[in-house]
Length: 93
Image: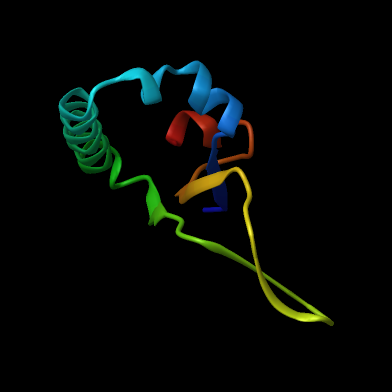
């Protein structure tokens, strides 16, 4: 079965619009815990579709003729799913 990669993205603007920075530390921690719990439950429920469960991405580096340097991008994580077609892949992820 074909494999497809889904990228999870977010921008600084979207992060700001979410109001995350306006939350107090305790509320942010509670939401982080809830989010990780929900993510784990989703992964468990959909593990048969995942060819690679993926992960969050850390700091980004650029490699070019000038060497290696720090950069940033909007990619937060990835998952690779198996699906019958490209059109069917989004319902898998």
